[in-house]
Every structure is written in structure tokens, then in C-alpha cells.
Amino acid sequence: MKILFFTFFFPRITETFIINKIISLLKQGVDVQIMAMADPSKHKAVEDRKPEKIIHSDVFKYNLLERTTYIKMINDKPDYRTIKQYFLKNNLDLVHFQWSGLADWILSKIDFSMPVITNFHESVIPKNWPRKVDEFQTIFTKSSLILPVSIFIKNHLQEQGCPTPKLQTHHMGVDINMFKVTKQIKKANEIVFLTVAGLLEKKGHQDALRVMKKIKDQGVNFKYYIVGDGVLREKLEKFVEDNNLQKNVIFTGKIVQQKVLKYYHKSHIFIHPSVTASDGSHEGIPTTIMEASACELPIISTIHTGIPELVIDGKTGFLSREHDIEKMTQDALILVKNTALRKRMGKAGRRIVVRYFNVDKLTLKAIQIYKSYI
Image (cartoon, rainbow, N blue to C red; front, side, top):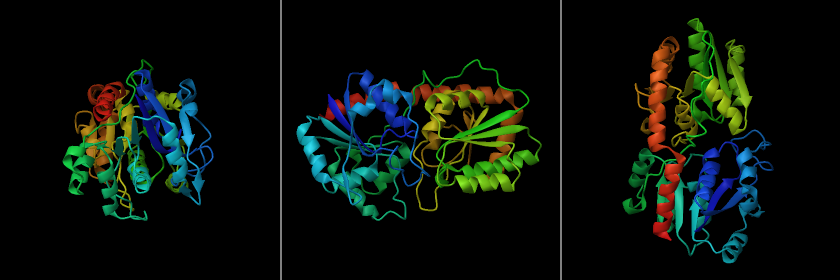
């Protein structure tokens, strides 16, 4: 079975869920080819401050760059003729678009002779995008199957007119053998908070920092590591400076997966208060929350799109309404003071990930899906 993963940027350091899924498929004997709009080391995404200069080691270990073809661009538009030639030369069984925005762009110009599957990581079109909601109809019509990454998004797509028989929820997953708890001893006199996410409005860093300010006012001794980078970095750093949080908050920038893992292992609490951004964009289910739960960290997050499908309020972490700083502060203080609760929530969170968000299980399910359409 030979399939094509079609994505915007590859290999992108922040999109480990795509890399991990490709590797998991390769391990199952699936021939995965990759087509990308751009190389992130040469071109930066809109939400990035600069091109990426680091690459996950697994990209080299599994020779993923040798499987990758970059699309020729003409006047900031893909050369559709080159894409068509690629498909004529390669005997593909199926095309899997990793992003709905990309599917909309390509499917509006090309009709494929093989089955097409499209992932939906969100079900709204940001207000500043030069297209209308009804243009999802191109994807609904030309895709053989549509895979929303959460039940919330599935329901939203149904409301927008997507035929129910074409919809199947398919979660992103994580490597539960990589992301797991260790016997590393954490500092008892200092609580460590962690967020791993691009510095974008919908990730909620601005609210997390407000929570940090409040718990500092309560006399909590803590460190807060923010792993990631993005267009909001200067604004967030200014908040840290204005509120005298420089000794508490550390920005690491983008780092490779193995280094991210070390931050999970040294942390006590994972905070990821996702919000609906001012442009209307939202999250699917953040993969880093899955990773943190797999590492047995309790979660502080929000009732936002599919997050409640992963984080069970009061069981694996605490959920608040978006922007509810007071509630998140109280949740943080409860976890700071209660070691046993942190451990109990962490273990419950890992059980959820192992059962529902294990990338290897999800890959076997994906292979069954592929076979049913080929």
C-alpha cells in the first residue's frame, strides 16, 4: 500500500504528530510518501518569527527527507502542473491531506483519480482568510472520507453540511513508550509548571501568565517553562517583565522532542488554557496535552473544542471556562498544595492516553480505513 501524506510544511518541529504518524505507518509496512508546500528551514509559516533550524532526530533515523517532494511555487501559488505530473509518475493508492486548508486549496484545482482523505484539526475558517465557509463544500464533495480529530469538530462539520457517512472521528496520538513517567526525583521545594505550544493567541499563554502572577502573589515558589516560539513572544516577554516574573518564567524557544521530554519529566503541572482566538481560530485536541498526560502530569486547561474528550475535569486535571483566570488560579493552588492529588490525576490521565490516544493503536485503525477505500 502506497499513500501520500500532503502537508503544508515538512518536517516541522511543532508538528510531531504528523512525523510520529508517518513513522508508525512505516513500521507497519505502509509505503508513505510526503508532499509538502515548503521546507520550514527555508520558509517560515505565518505564525513563526523565523524559519526553523532544528529537526527531530527521527526524521533522519527514518530517512523521511528522502520520501519528501516539495511543490514548486509560482507567484506564491502551487504549480498544479507539477503536482499532476508527480501523480502520473507515482503509482499511489491514496492521498491523505493533513490539513483542511491545504485540501481546499489543492482540490479546488485538481481532481484525483484515487481516494482522498482529509483531516480536520479545526472546523472554522479564520476571519482573515480570503475564503468563505461554503468553500468547505469542495472538501466535502471531493474527499472520500473526512477525519475530524475530535467529536466536537465532527459535530461542527455536520452542522456545516458535511455528509454524515463521510465523517469519522480519528484522534491524533502519541508514542506512549516514549512519553511516560520516569523515576526522576523532582524538587520538593519548588513547583514546576510547563506549557509546550507555539506562541499563538489560541494556545492561551497570556492567560497562563496571568495565573502565574496570581500564584506568585500567593507566595508560591515556582518555575514556569514555556517551550515553543511564535509571533507573540515579544508581547509575552513584556508581560513577564512588567509583572516582575523574570525569575519565575523561562522561555526555551523551539527544541527537539527528546529535550521536550526532559521538561515533562522535571515538571509537576501542565497548563494549557486554550482559547478561541480573535480571528475565530481554535484548537483540535493539543497533542502536547496528550504527551503531558502520558507522562503522568495533571492538566490545567479549558472547556475548549475537543479538550474535554482528553482531560476529564476533576479526574485527570481541571477544566475552566476560557479566560477564567480566578478558577484556573484556584485549580493551580490546589495542585501545588496536594502532591497525592497530582499523582492520582497523572496516573488517571495516562490511562486515558493509553486507551484512546496511543499512536500505534490509531495507526492500525488508520490502516483499516485506508484498506477500506483502496
